[in-house]
Every structure is written in structure tokens, then in C-alpha cells.
Length: 92
Image 1 (cartoon, rainbow, N blue to C red):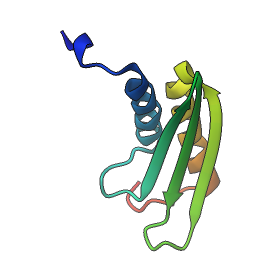
Image 2 (image 1 turned 60 degrees about the horizontal axis):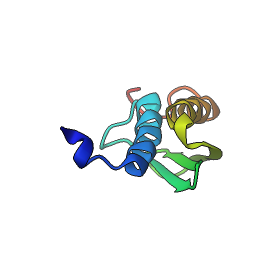
Image 3 (image 1 turned 30 degrees about the vertical axis):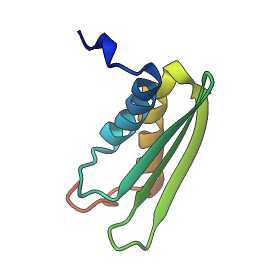
Image 4 (image 1 turned 90 degrees about the horizontal axis):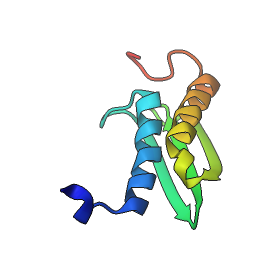
């Protein structure tokens, strides 16, 4: 029933972005960002986490196959958290 309104390209981008946010365990109050851009069959995923006081920023930028967005998002989230170290997000 939803096929008529489903946009495949939007779905591919959303899958990557949501996987990144899930890996970071982010909420609407967590200073994180993700942006997925399609270029044909290639997907570019950019992600960023920022300390709440703005003093530290960690970012990553990856390219991959459009169908690998979920894997890319999860991988990127783990890499960003590892780079930031424990306690980067208060209460996490």
C-alpha cells in the first residue's frame, strides 16, 4: 500500500542517517548530525558529534554503495564514539 508513495532514493539516505543516529544512541537533545547524499549508486555519508559545550568535534566522511547505508551508518557511529572516548556525552 505504501509503495505508491515510497521514494527509493530517500529511503536509502534515511537508512544511512538513521543507522548512524542509532549507533550513537542519539536523541533530539544530543549534538550530533548526519547527512547522506546519493550520487548515482554511490552514497556519501557525513557524520559529526559535538561536545555539548562546543569544545570538541569529531567528524567522519565515507563513500560506499547505496545499498550499504545501514552498515556505513553503524560503522561510522562506532568510529566516532571510539574517537571521542568514554563520557563524551553526559549521561551516556
